[in-house]
Image (cartoon, rainbow, N blue to C red):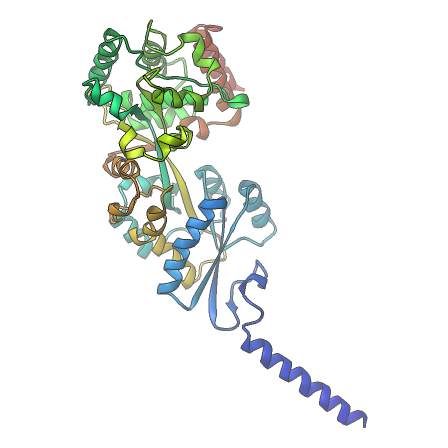
Length: 439
């Protein structure tokens, strides 16, 4: 009796195991995060940790769907977290990294590379990068002399925005040099128009908008190697190279009649509010320097009709002897140590192609650097123009202040603010930033 009961129990367990196998083990979402194998013994799984949330996560899921349709044997699972910078470090230290991590800032990826926690890129993906990207993207994804990163969704700064119908009705022309931009500024004042909309107030981060100005001027007055040495602390803020950038900005900001509200308004006006002054009727001011994300701050009526209401151009060259570089940012994807498998490589190689850009670009809200992308899918000409500017760039660098030590970054923000408000002379502000580097 006892023997027959045992046989029945064993038979039931075997039957249950077959049912579970047929059901795929309960679905991919229940697989432990540290697993590197299969789901249900059939599909190979690729796990990605990133900072995309909300609509961005939804758009990235559309990218994943295209890959999965072409690779039905691979299941890609994306997890987006608000505290990505913390979570990726915790998981690596716990020995439970994702297969792929998407860093919104390259600094974290560079640190993991220095610690030996990343997989160098392999020949097949490097060939795709060489084919589909401008050379500087490979350079920006290289840490310690080794390429690790594949860039996907990107952005750029240093665009000058304007009210398109008002600008055209006034007969103004888009400048192609700094001298032409200066002449346009004077022409606007002669016509009774205030040229520049400006505001650098941003709560505890007040001043960052001013650092963007300095960085973009540096990228048009100095070779990229000087910019790199500036980030590294080898070129002081008080050096002639950096001081010149501040002086050029001072001519824009502090010349009478140049800025709506005058000099004091620069520090008091929120950076987002400043963008809306372009679209009053008539415009309170006519030009606004900001990154590609500025459209999020325009009035709703403007956002609904961007192509007809908004114009833009890249900040023009300043020094004719310097090849201007574009200030860029973007999401760089890397493979974590111990996660280098064929299916992981296949997804990274897909991300290095224009086909991976199409699903998100078609939805809007994402710009991509791939030379083989289909530019026609962008829903607005504004997005297309930004993408074209990124593709046309001959050189590019990341935001300098973001790459500097945190104390220097904070001192940079404060120094620009104190100088703009008149609370510090330029020399005193630059000396205080340099002091933060020395500490």
